[in-house]
Image 1 (cartoon, helix red, strand yellow):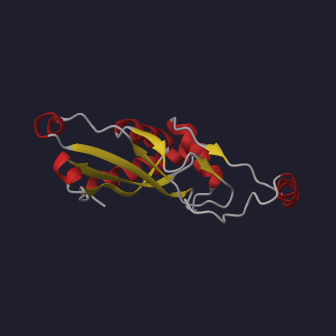
Image 2 (cartoon, rainbow, N blue to C red):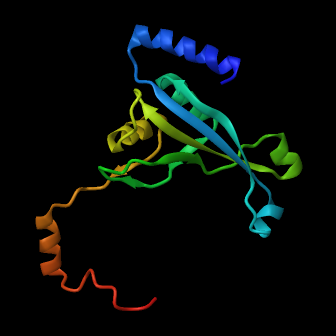
Length: 162
């Protein structure tokens, strides 16, 4: 961790003692794309912007805004799903974008919430916090599955080719 990240972490820890807000361990990655790379179906240049930094709620919200985070890797999350990330869908409009046609996209990964692995409900709260739509997938009981099988016989069979 660089000196600025360490200083931010100390400030966050001091603030956390005062406010008792959740802490998040996050990383932000960037990918730079160009039309030439897209036409050649090549992967763009990727780099780490923020690496496993512990942040508070306000900092997480600011990072999401600063990096244009607006989507989740899935539109739904179910209990038991334990990996999801958030990303930008529009490139950052900076000098490289206007002068060289370089499009930079970002992804936000949450590695821990209060020193534990994030769960589905954590991702739901994170999405709400940063203004990203994320629906909870309804949990189906065995009774629901049985009723569906009775009402739609053969509905789960895939005996045809596409």
